[in-house]
Amino acid sequence: MNLIKCTFLLFNILCSFLCNSQDDDSLFPSDKVFTLVDVAPEFIEGEARRLIYLKDSLRYPQSAIKRKIEGWVYLSFIINKLGEVDSMTILKGMSFDCDKEAIRLVSLTKWSSGTIDGIAVNTRVNMPIKFELENKYKRKKCPFSYVLNYIVRPLAGLFR
Image 1 (spheres, rainbow, N blue to C red):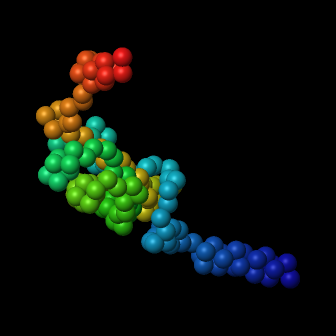
Image 2 (cartoon, helix red, strand yellow; image 1 turned 180 degrees about the horizontal axis):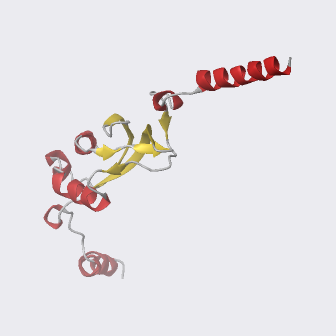
């Protein structure tokens, strides 16, 4: 009788192990997006090359140059299991053209996917893109001495 119980118990353990074993894809559903992972997604060529790419590839919109718009566009996107950019949204934008340029820049990039326990997973990434005008396009600031000598002192003379 004990032999039958042990065989039955061993059979149940074996069946439950085989029924509950899962392949890598079923551990993390394909539509689940993680924000915290063991290894974060990274630009394929490294962080230094990402910064160089953003600086060299950014095409400042003419409308933003004319209006002298500077600032940051904050993007949020998903790096999927294949390292591709998906589901991009703008968290905080500047202007339509700058937002569009930031999306274009990031959509052309290739990343290594984020991993949990060595398994590639979809990962949410937030990234700021800086738009800064070259010196020739920046607004010229009025020097303090000009304001003092040509505006304040003459006005003060009117009230003596």
